[in-house]
Image (cartoon, rainbow, N blue to C red; front, side, top):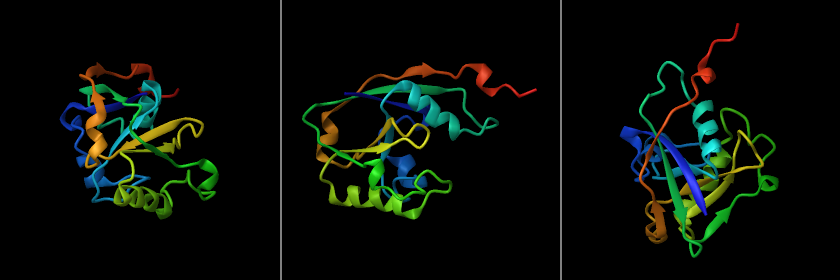
Length: 154
């Protein structure tokens, strides 16, 4: 299976440092994790909804990652989530799900629903897991948004 990540050039490493520094909806601050999406278009939407138009870098990279079929993937099912799972800020119970997953270290990948498009999936990668080495991280490619996405509304 192929997943995608969009990152600025200076944060393109797959070391989980961004997740460790800032945390996420699905993981608390302090634990290394790398987030990817099922498709390049979903990765773009995830980046876009979290972008500050004044600060969005112009040196974005798209990075494909192939997940070996032998790598276990844990899955979070939408039906098991609290009704407010899509709210902002997110309920703390969501970060507890990722924290538990990272601490148990049963799999290198956690599949979670996208808040942007709940029928699609994002994938948290645990760089400290032994199976992380079974992922193939491809060379990055330049990525840019269509400038019309940033245009002011009349």
